[in-house]
Amino acid sequence: MPRKIIIDTDPGQDDAVAILLALASPEDIEILGITAVAGNVPLALTAKNARKVCEVAGRSDVKVFAGCDRPLAHALVTAEHVHGKTGLDGPDLPDPTMLLQDQHGVDFIIETLRVEPSGTVTLCPLGPLTNIATALQKAPDIAEKVQEIVLMGGAYFEVGNITPAAEFNIYVDPEAAEIVFKSGVPIVVMPLDVTHKALVTAPRNEAFRSLGTHPGTVVAEWTDFFERFDKEKYGSAGAPLHDPTVIAYLIRPDLFTGRYVNVEIETQSELTRGMTVADWWRVTDRAPNAMFMGDLDADGFFALLTERIARL
Ligand code: RIB
Ligand code: CA
Image 1: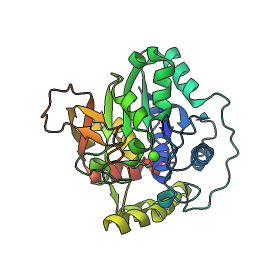
Image 2: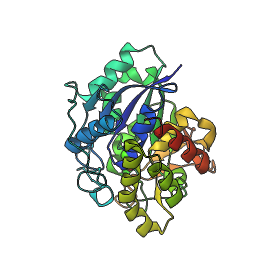
Image 3: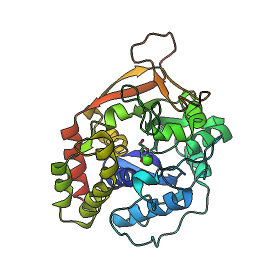
């Protein structure tokens, strides 16, 4: 029985690969819809990019919605320095022909959770948590209806990537993250602690390119573009492929290990805004609220990813 999901996203080359992985896995995943949020680039671009990605996979039937265009309490912070000015730099892809849905992404999330049987819909946020938090605030009744939230965001041992203390998705909208982590909804977190071990080394990127398919070539060219920032910054062997870890978890949770711990979000301090304070060593009596991942089988992850992208 495929798992019903809503992908909430700010494409972003790594978001794009996550969407392709989900579209390539119909036996595991049924995408009910994709909701775009402002993050890596402004909303108009993330909503456009989400449709571009669906069309790379020949899936103009997927419903794509625009959600919130700015964080709850702060001005939007974007990441063109990583993803380029379009947010999807690398290959030159045509403008999408498929249309955006008229409904606001937040209302789609609320309506879907109210219509589908309780406990059967998983939310997969890959960007700032603005849409998810807004839905929870507008319709508190949906919290108990969500099967699970599996998100990319935060960090503990890896600390920050946009500031010394915070990971980008949480940093952009820490108030939204606080609402999500206090919602009581079951949460699985894919932090930088995991994604920085999912590096697209040259052999791994060549495996995408040598598929000889349009999607395979596009994935390789996205990686060629966005790895330049991380390799220079971290001196790493390749770019961390952050967001596809969320989708891979739905298909092969055994690839990941972590701990069920308390995670709180810093929202007050300018210095540490957006920090995910994970009680990894259980030194407080704060109740655990998230499965915080710490490691993955990187070879297994890339084998799954390559095998599935080859299907498109
Ligand atoms: O910090 C990495 C996260 O921020 C990823 O989701 C990337 O796409 C950006 O949104
Ligand atoms: Ca993202």
